[in-house]
Length: 84
Image (tube, rainbow, N blue to C red; front, side, top):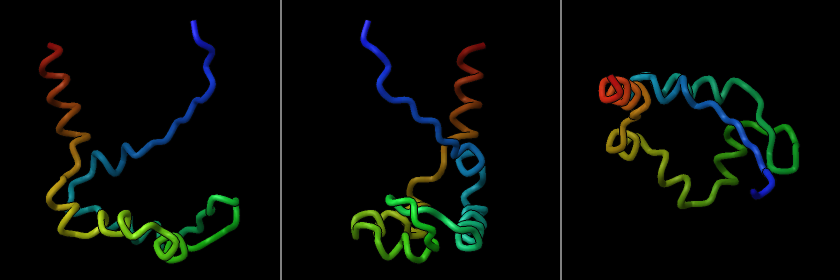
């Protein structure tokens, strides 16, 4: 058996279970709190957005988010119904 070399845990559950109309509130919260860059320096949300690759920035528009709505709550409900 191969050894475990990496374990990562990240929770996006609140956002995935939120309605698309509530997503701007996550943006507000991100702008209000501090973040860390890849080197561990404290930066703002705007700093991270400016440092983001252009392809990433293109994926966080309202139009893109509306075209790809969250599936967390719906997906979980569908899975639970199929399981039973």
